[in-house]
Length: 409
Image (cartoon, rainbow, N blue to C red; front, side, top):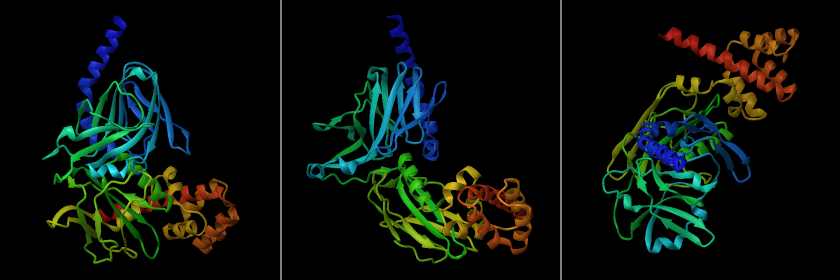
């Protein structure tokens, strides 16, 4: 029919632009990890969390076209309007270990539980992977694993692109990308990877956590969420430029001769939600820059380097007000962190009076006794005023940092 031909033309046109567009978005996908929207042909489509206990999301694609969830790397090409639900699974809970006696298996990306209604409206599903298509990697090793009632069912993808594998006219299940390599084959599998560096602020001893993980946007988001629970703040760093070797060991070092525990990290993949290994070190009050390096252990090749300066900590500890609430901890942690960050109180006190957190008398008393009095007053007023005090402190801190930066130019 003409209607069917029109849908086919749309899908054909989408296929022509998907590869180039996805390649352009490749590195943006890894960074846009907090976005709960699909990019679509007519704008963004909101993703709704419908079951927090199972981490299940739902959305409706309103028209034909290509859609990408940049927070996970998951994509769809649809022929018509369709409702989709998405949940996340763990490879360790579904991939039988006894299969490794016959084959070498590598989980190459997240595991998704997907349904679509109507199912036939989906022309393609794009399942993300982190395998670098270089060197000895053979695209025939890529398989789509479906986990169904009868067990694991394997399906060859229609094609493999640098950041995802495509399945045409898919049937849906708990599914993800596996790499199957014949047993006894000795190969170095190159993967795209990411370094995630977090600091935990403390007035006397700043703590750092450094992760080396595959470039999985969903995994990055899960680590971000876990670090945020313990007041960790991520510093923006570039990933390793070249692909790293899956299963290889890497040595973490620093220029300040600070003790790092552990100094050695193995580049492996653990499903989002599982405990992820990291290196930890303390930097005191950090008055000088610290250079961090990661070196491949076997060949002693430098694969990643960054410099953290004191100003990075100051700026990282002063995000925009909406994100600040995730950084503050309850009770004593709030008091300690806010105390460490308060500078000139005049603007802070004015903002708190404007928000009716402090009276005029309390403001004048606080101006005399300064930090401790301010925090004690706000604590006594309950949890609500913490939000106002946080916003006021952020404004004051940002203003102070901006002033100091201007003076140093």
